[in-house]
Length: 483
Image (cartoon, rainbow, N blue to C red):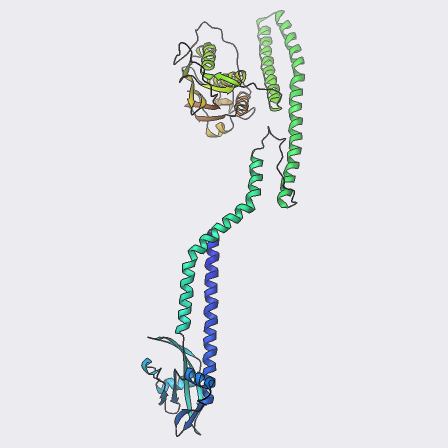
C-alpha cells in the first residue's frame, strides 16, 4: 500500500511537471512567432506606427489581431510611450526610460501577474525612420495554461485515493494469485515433522523455480527420512541387544549377593543391582520410544472415563506420596469422557504424577484435576514443587533433558518420561501446556478430544480421592525433565 502510494504520487508529480513544461514551451514559442511576425507588419510614418497587412486575407487578419491584443511601442532614444494596445491599457504596464534601456540591452521575455491572469511579455528592438529605433513588447495570456494546469491538478487529487485503492486491490489480487502456490507449499511443509517424514511436497509439473524448490526439499526429506530410520533402527537394535547381557550380569550379581561374606560386600552388590535396574528401565524406555515413533505400537481408541481412571491412579500412588510427606489429591468436575487408548492414557497420567511427586518437597501438595472444557477433556497436574524457569520449560519435552542437577530433587530419572507424555498427547490429537515458576511449582495441562458418549458417574462421586495408607506402592512411569 505504501509503495503503491509513493509510486502513484511520483507519477502524478512527474506528469504534472512534464505537462507544465510542455505548455510553457508552447506559450514561449507562440510568443516568439507573434513578435517576429509583427515586425513584418509594422510601418513608421513621421514617427507614428501603423500596420500594413491585407484586410482581405483572413489568416493575416487573425494573426495581426492576436499579435496586437497585448503590445506596446517605446521610443528607445527618449523612453517615450509611442503606442499601447487597448488590452494593455487597464493593466497599467508603463515603463520608465531606465526600464526601456534595460529591456533593450536584455531582450528576454518576462512574466507579470495581473488581475486578469498572468501575461508573458517579449522584448524586441525594431528600426523606424533612419536613426531611430523602437522597443516592441508583445504579450500572450497564460490564463488558459494556468487554468488547464489547475484542472489537471484537481483531477490528480480527486483520482489519487480511488487510484490508490484500485492499485492496492489489484496488487493484493495479483500477489494472491502469484503467491498461492508458495502458500500451499509452505502449508504442506509445516505439516511435516519427524513422525511424517514419508510425506512429500506437491509439485505442479510446470518446471519453474517453485517446482525446483519443492523437488530439492523432497530430496532432502528423503535423505532425512533414511537417516532417521537408520537411527531408530539402531536405537531399537542396541536396546534389544543390551537386554540379554544385562540380565545375565544381574543374575551373576544376585548369586554373588547370596554368598557375600560381609555387610559391605552386600551393600556394594545391592547398589550394583539398583544401577542395573535403572539401566534396564532406560533401555526399555528407549526401545518403547523407538517402536512408538516407528509406528510399531498400535493404539486402540475407545471412550474412557478420565475421572474414574484418575481416581484409581491417585489411589494407587497415595502410599508413595505419603512416604515423602506429600498430599496427593484428585478433583473431578463430573464425568469426563474422551476417545483414547486406556493403557496409554494411564501411562500419561502416571508419568505426570510421578514427575510432580519427584520434584515436590516434603510438606508439599500435588493435585490431579479432571474437568470438561468445551466438549474436550482437560487433565491438570499441579504441584507446589521446585518449578522451572521459562528456558527449562521450553526444553521439558526433549529427550534426555535434565536441568542443573544441583537444583534437582533426588531421583533416578533419565529424562524420557515427559518425552513419552508428549508422544502420547500427539497421538491422541491433543495438546499439552506447562505453566511453571521457580520455587512455586508447575502445572501441566493436557487437553484431549471428547468422546461424544457420556459414561454414568460413579455411584459415590468424591471431590478428593486418596487410597488407604496400608496399600503397597509400586514403581510406575518416569517423568524427570525438571530440575
